[in-house]
Length: 487
Image 1 (cartoon, rainbow, N blue to C red):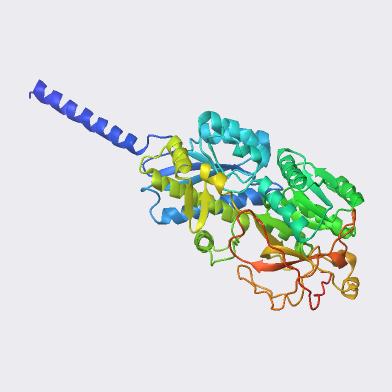
Image 2 (cartoon, helix red, strand yellow; image 1 turned 90 degrees about the vertical axis):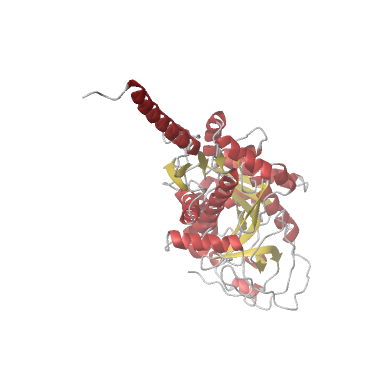
């Protein structure tokens, strides 16, 4: 039997080659960038998933995954699902370098998202810049990440300098406090916060009363506490994660030291409240995302629904909301980028578009971000570990009888007037009528606020703060003071 004619054989071979070539072209049209395939886009995260700061890395991961699950349930982005690989660096810069390199070179991720910490980020940024890998929404407000020469970094949060300015503004203007000390982590993160506080004080012709430090990944705070107690500051601002900050506050209260405590957003507010228990009442924490329990804000309602769908056991918190916002941002940007996304194209688009509306939460990038910086919010921990969003700090002089009736160690840094309307998390409380404006209480130099001079936080609110984090101040005369009993 004769085989096919040579011409027919050539036609068959040619058709086969054409089919193979067409398949390759079609495949490449769908996946011409690292981390992008026909059905998915792969992201990587390097963060503390174990150890004393693990609540931060896990919180960011939880929020990102909730956002990705929400997007994927709707068909993904241009038919591709969004996937995440998370690797643990234990909040250690050397491990961060290794895990970042592994994600880029071995896992072949399209972009990195949700890194946690200043020292770890400082170690990873040179790697992503050299490879031009998008580095989206790091959980740090470090100043160096705002440098214009960093083209791969996408920041979605306010800087530590902005948080420090908000602290000093409220402490000095609302409470007339003049003696402020700082407790900070002795590394790039802590020093960045220190620089922000010093700059804010210099603008007001002030200096720090005292400084106390601790080493990263430890709770060795005794030396810092002794140094700050000797200086008797009226307020202590804190730049560190929840573990050492909680330890410092606990030891301070037990020793009869009751300044106003103000914490940076990186602390992990929910983890701090959990660590402190009843001793957390009145502790102030600045935040850079909307109030996670205020479902009247559209993006918060979306976040709560996404978390519940992803894992009904999860509870809202500030860290996971930030992760959710990061996930929603990349989904929005990828949708705009079209069906053939590239790393360079994504970065260029975010900078060029400049303004993203994520469920009513506006994110600004590039030149737009300089004109409208991210917001800073103030919150205060309640006796049950929940939070209230506040827009002012007010001071008053409660009766000596009410204050002396309580053990010194049981009186929190912020007493709450019993007739101040209470609210559940996420609901606004109305101020009572007849508020009176009274002269603020001034304390002499080098005196800390005793329980009888503790500040009261009023003006409970839910919703956006002023753009620069400013708060108006109202002082009112309390009718009576709630008794705070030792738990």
